Image (cartoon, rainbow over all chains, first blue to last red; front, side):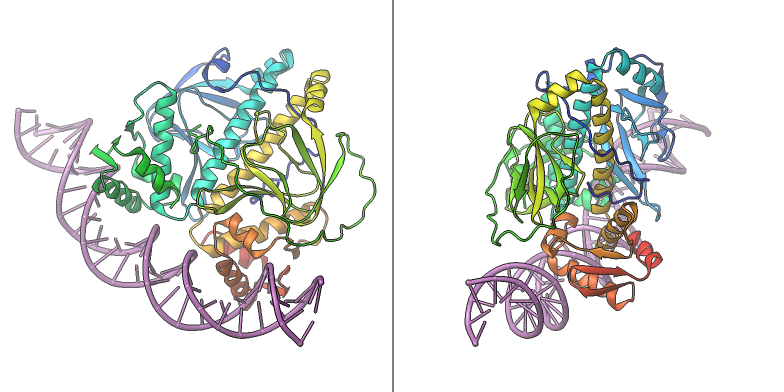
Length: 234
Length: 234
DNA sequence: CGTCCCGTTGAGGCGGTTCAAAGTGCGTGG
DNA sequence: CCACGCACTTTGAACCGCCTCAACGGGACG
């Protein structure tokens, strides 16, 4: 695949493939729970690791929200993904992280030494397939995000994010209509490739149109799901 | 990780029929790949698989250029990635492909049955780790693409693509200054989230500024690498 | 020689950014 | 408990860049 950034090209050319997935879904929580390691508290805006750091640890989010991001040469921050409790960052087997990670809220994470990961994979080869599946899920999510960034209108981007958060709530058994925006407008803007003003304007436009309620800046109530969905591809 | 798209609704849309007769394929020797499976010829604009298809095969690109893409509800095509000879698509272990794949030029690919992949990985468990590494590399490339899409200016996007193609040439031992754009302006636009007019304008602006030469529409010669690099973060 | 597809070039409009300022919520300290 | 201060959000006005629409040019092919 064409790599847009210079990363001292890793060419693992011809290899072979995975096995049939055991069952639909979660590459989250329970898979990683047996993994050991101490729990670390990270304050809001605290970094877990930085772009280019040696990948000595993976991190399982226990609570709070963590984001992966890159700082561009001009100082801009681009958020690559949001990670919620149960998600694992940095488990892939490259020598260095290709991005930074920081907590968007106060968070707790489990530090999983890489040596332990490798040892476990050697002892239990089926774990590698499990991680491969996790990577496939993350790859899919990243592709979704990519398609979203290419969306034509700002409204479509913001609506997509709201719907994604709503789906996540539903998947967890929570109310899909009640969305808590734990991240700031700046975080959302850096995630969607928009300015904070535009994010704010879109949310308030949706509110004016009766698509959502906005009782607080951090609290969104979806009132017209179909309407939001229609905006997604506009 | 937050998934922006609903993985449950896969819309496989209409295929674009090849309008051109199959172009000649540069003949090369019988590439002996460790991966088994028959070699398939794919004409330009021919599809390998469609979004939502059962992932019954993986595909190793032998020659030509293949792209992964999605068709949005409004009919727009978004290209997720370019794949060159040696790259493998669809090796991840999800049940269905989450995207379509089509040849941008006449191409040859090796069809690798999934059953074979499963069998090989059972016989040689260490292969799963190699696939995990491949996934990590692809994930990194996708993140790079994502950051590129969030770039502020159209010029930055086009310059990023040119530099990526140049780096790929260098990695292969070819002349990094001579770039062949085997894909059309439409393909580039769908990859960068731009219109074909803007892509064309940016290329010709670079030419006017002396950054590149453009002897033919499909042939770019880099004249000022530093200049292009400066535009990248503008 | 005509057609089709692709690339280029121009004119105009719109959406998101930029710049600026006011409003809101919340924690801290008096 | 209230007042203050700070950070975040909201809102407004003007600008700029990319998209849209349109027309032209050029190679490939029948």
